Each structure stands twice: as structure tokens, then as C-alpha cells.
Image (tube, rainbow, N blue to C red):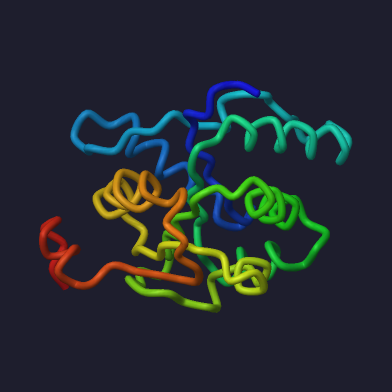
Amino acid sequence: MSYRNKTYVAFASEDIHNYRLMTAWKASDNIDFDFTNAHDIYAAYDTSTPETIKRRLRERLNNTKQVILLGSPDARRKGGNGTSFLAYEVNAIISLGLPVVIANLGGARGHVSGNVPTPFADVDYYTMAVSFGPKVTKYALDDYAANFAGSGDTGPYWYKESVYESLGLNK
């Protein structure tokens, strides 16, 4: 296995514009948000067979140290349906034991069960929910994801308002 140094962004296809926004944050000189994008390796094309796409997804996840899940009702539905590529990704994430930051697209700062694929709840998987934005997402990748392994924690977590305030993200 290669060195795990990538960040994998999982999302429902309906939320791809938010993924593209994240890559714009990364490219901007005015936003402090950077990550080594796992989607930049092992390309899978729309014309690939489902088996090839799943193999490429697994290769990407094998090189991943952390995951951002764009939390939305579509992500919950597709990530728990057992047949979509997102459902495949969710099951692979769980089997690999990767830290998951759920970036709520609706702006919620806490756990929103309607945004989280049910397989995470079924196994009481340790996740960190944040609102969708560069500052708090970067903070979660640096803080939560770095301390995930061996924490022994389970279930959904989220930051207190004081964390958002310390980042200058007052309501």
C-alpha cells in the first residue's frame, strides 16, 4: 500500500458543485484551505465499467488518511442504498477505519442524522460534523482527523460554539 497522505471527498453526485467549490478554495491564494486530493489519482471515467470504477475508488481510498463527506439528504440516501458508488465508498471507508469529517451542506454545525448515510450509524462510527466552510473544515482535518486513530470514541460528534468563535465564525 502507498503512503496514506490524501484527503478523500465523498459526495452524492447531486452535490458535485460543492466539491468543485472546495477545489476552488484549495486553488485560492486568499483562502487558507489545502489538501492533497485523492480524486487526483487513479482516474475513473464515466465510460468505465462499474467494476473498474469501484476498483479505482478503492485504490484512492487505500491512499487516503482522512475523508470529508459532504453531508446532505442526497448523501444519506445514496450512501445507505447499498447500490450506488457512494454506498460503496461509505462501506470501504468503514472497513478501512478512516476518520470522517461530515461537512453539512445546509450549514448546520452539529450532527444532522438526515445528512449521514445509515451505515455510519449502524456501526456507531466516530464522525465529526461541521458546517460546510473552509475554516472549520480545515480545523477538523487538522484536529479531529489527526487524533482519530486510537481515540476509542464512537458515534457522532461536533464542535462546541466556542470552537467556531475561536475561528472567527460567530453566528
